Amino acid sequence: MVTSIASDPATTIDSLSHTADELTIRWADEQTSHLSALWLRDHCQMPASRNPNNGQRLLNITDIPLTLSIATATRVGNDRLTVVFEPGGYASTYDTCWIRGNCYTLNNAYDDRSAKHKRLWKKNDLASDLPTVAYPQFAHDLDDETRALRYVAEYGFCVLTDVPCNSRQVLNIIAHFGHPRITNYGDIFEVKTVVDPNNLAYSNLGLGCHTDNPYRNPIPTVQLLHCLSNSTHGGDSILVDGFRAATVLREESPTHFQLLVGNWVSFRFSDDTADLRSRGPMIEVDDLSNIIAVRFNNRSISSIQLPHERMAAYYEAYRHFAEILEREDLKVTFKLEPGHLLLFDNTRVLHARTAFSSDGKRHLQGAYADLDSLYSRLLVLERSKVGV
Ligand SMILES: [Fe+2]
Image (cartoon, rainbow, N blue to C red; front, top):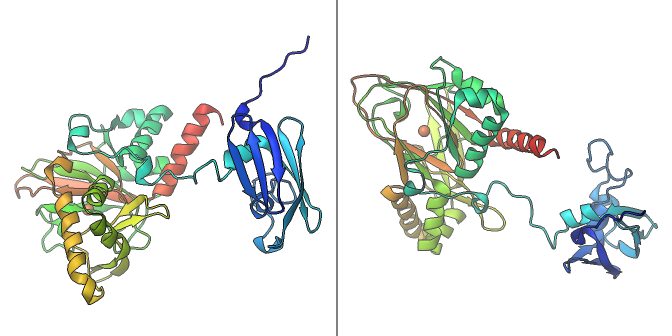
């Protein structure tokens, strides 16, 4: 008895046609792929073009003449097709699954960072239910580690509870997903009241919503704050979803939004041993106009240099964004207790704190790390779970 396996209509070719410049595939699910000859040659998956072990491309773009054309295109069995190119007669065979999964007329470019793929939030969305994972579970159960990192990817932050109140413990958290970003502050930094601080973060003043270190390039993209003690009055933590705030700005005034996207400003941190300077937009978008980062730090914004005729409009936009960031309905407020650790995306989530009394003790240890290793760890954990 012959058993037939039903093929997936999405990867089954219904018809194939071509011109010199373009291959057209009509799929059995009635979708159509249009693929340029140059793209097809550049994306050849054969061992002559790709290292079979690591998949990395072996040919250079300058190896492909712009006069390249498709001579023939032929189905091979049910799941492959062969394209012959001229000049030269090079033949490349592709799996239909690969073509369908990578076809640029049917798939969007990979994107796991932009606001389009996030759960944007405001106060009422999270007020009574912060994304939280207990550290003992995070440390010993890969599903719980995955959940915590997924919270950071989707909400921009996660609170770990029951973290041992040991000095430098914050580095043990980073070791799960990456490496610390060592800066002029060291591998960790202390956030506690000091006399004559070089940074207002080390005073007991309240701090407005900000992202950290916009004066660096690259900016540290992950921040961790581990609470070792907090017996003061006040000193509550405040978080704002910068992607949400930027989305609100775009809705209320596309002109203001565009002013903050299109004009770069300078940031600076300077003390006896460091002088860090960088420029960037307060709101950064990708090539598809999706929001991908916010930079906002009133303390470290430096001399704003813009064309004079644009300055008044820029200030209007800057002030509008600052006013949105201070809206109560966007702020999630909570008290970090000893043993709590805040892990957050410094390209998206702004943090602030209320002023606190000089009696009692408030001591946080912080560290920076990077999103690329966090996302990589998350993808590897999720990939191993689904077995791909
Ligand atoms: Fe900060």
